[in-house]
Image (cartoon, rainbow, N blue to C red; front, side, top):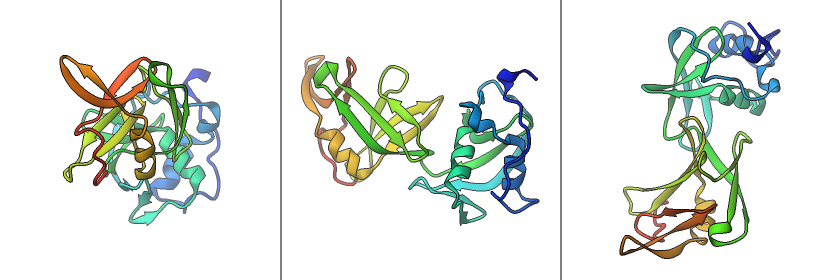
Length: 207
């Protein structure tokens, strides 16, 4: 295994009780997260089934129904999360296990804005401290919800998305403007030369 494959030495201590899935995954990862983002798209270990781990709609991680209270452990697992065509998985060099995600895996909890209109730059921090600047590789999307409001999302990496928190949703929509698109008026947000329409305009009820 080359250095690019992120060799994994000794497991971190004290993160989980011995003998369970958390301990096994931690042992397989070792200090891999300290070496930068693991190349999970290149890892193709065998699928070893699902484990009882869930990411709730509020971004909280749970194992066997119990919140994972160590931020460092959550960030470690988040760094090896991948979305395969049929499921979300945690990927190590030696195994791939499925987990449940209620909505999307991350929350966008902080926003920074520079400039206006087409020249505007917009960056977010997620609840696991990913820093994401909106652009071609990290687009925004606005989904309509059942209550008639909107839920903004941004792509973090691969097919992993973060939902913008309710408070930031209002700040984000405050940046919106109306434009003529194909002969129709659309309301949306301009960022880095792109325009992201908001379904239903600026209606935030239930966002």
